[in-house]
Image 1 (tube, rainbow, N blue to C red):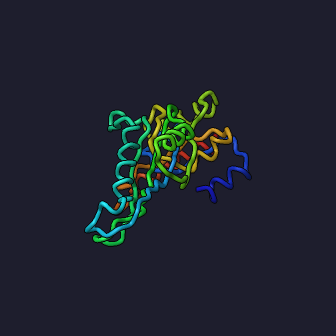
Image 2 (cartoon, rainbow, N blue to C red):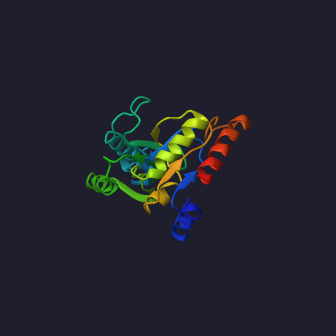
Image 3 (cartoon, helix red, strand yellow):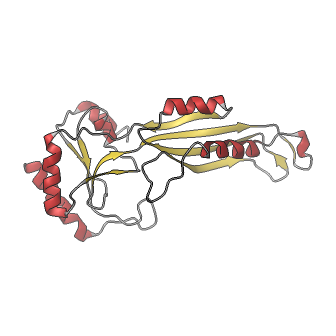
Length: 219
């Protein structure tokens, strides 16, 4: 992350970067940007038996999250290259008989070229949604006019059968380099259950990638 590849990208100045992420042998040259926000809601504490005396922060948070979800088009397997929002964590309240006076949720927004983070956050403020930035990162974006892309595509096509560049919904350390105008391709073997149980890579899938990296470096 920022303390690894982020710092290295400011120290070294490579001509080209290969990022070793599992891509199912695909050649990834574009990724979505990342915006993590903590959404905060506030209310008034009171006894749960007399809800009219308080203001429930969890209910306010639920309404705010519903407003945010409506700001995003529906994504699907066939329609992936669109901005998305995931509610990843939520907290609030400490007892059934107490009206909570504060609640929060952390959301993971992945965005494309059509999404402007600053405009989006200004929109949240305009509709009364309280938030703070947890983390953010730009998109992975490349200029394919660089002749090294054609060479990488040629070698990968020969060794792994991939004949085109693709974009992915996730984010990686590669963005730190393209932010500094260094061309970068993310390339790696198939993986099982990424970020899930028994995440793994098969040994037999490693060697074609190993040989491809070597040939790219040599040429």
